[in-house]
Amino acid sequence: MINDAHCHFFSSRFLELLAPEGVGADEIAARLQWDPPGTATELGDRWIVELDRHNVSRAALIASMPGDAVSVAEAVAHHPHRFIGFFMHNPLGTSADTTLDRALKTLNMRGVCLFPAMHGYRLDDEVVERVFRSAADHGAAVFAHCGVLTVGVRKALGLQSRFDLRLGDPLALARTALGFPQVPVIIPHFGAGFFREALIAADQCPTIRFDTSSSNAWIRFNPGLTLEAVFRHALAVVGASRLVFGTDSSFFPRGWVRTAYEEQQRIVTGLGVRDDDREAIFGSNFDRLFPA
Ligand SMILES: [Zn+2]
Image 1 (cartoon, protein in one colour):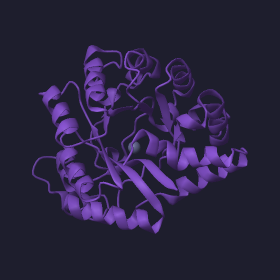
Image 2 (spheres, helix red, strand yellow):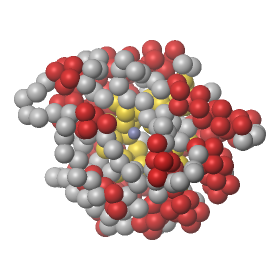
Image 3 (cartoon, rainbow, N blue to C red):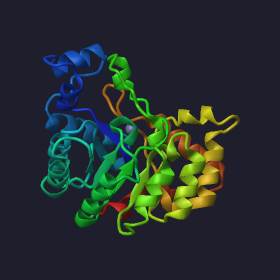
């Protein structure tokens, strides 16, 4: 069984929110050489066809701009047994608390995604505590992007991305997460460059999991580090039960990034990970975190 904990839902609305005023979603898609996403329902249906093609059971779809949870909610509503919804949230945005409440309560989102380096706050700030409190109230998870942050689509569109990477500190996240033992926490890409800090944070705070997604190109910042070694160290510190497979798939026509899956399977098999642990990483950990 395969479940993917990290797919971006690049909807038409996402493109409109990202684009300069007055530029339509289809025009942006054309500029990026992507297929036009169509309606959220159409895009969700396309994802289902794609997941079926690769035998992927369920996926977390991430609304990847504040204000786009509604698109993901639409796709999830049509396929509630296949999709769960995550959404990018800016706790410093206008009427942040209302937006958060609406996404978790009305739109049934299962994960709040924080990008502190993008939006400019510390992960041990009071605004993040409020996010955790809300997640606790609604049984949601918190996904916090730490470390290196590059947003390919922003780069491709020439948008300024003056991110403060110091803010993506796993240790600050652990400080907050420790106060909310009922809230599962996901750090994507093993901490994306703050690997050592992510391991320390996860060792200190048992609610922290890593998603394994993306090409993990951040390993180039650690001289000599390989993805094999990343998996080996992560397994040694947090164990298989706290690793959740993901690809970081996003746009069409590329679709689901099978190469990420194959590489990770090859690595995990090469490390001699037991079958039940392998199943946990690639499938059942996700189901336990997010029951259908
Ligand atoms: Zn991603």
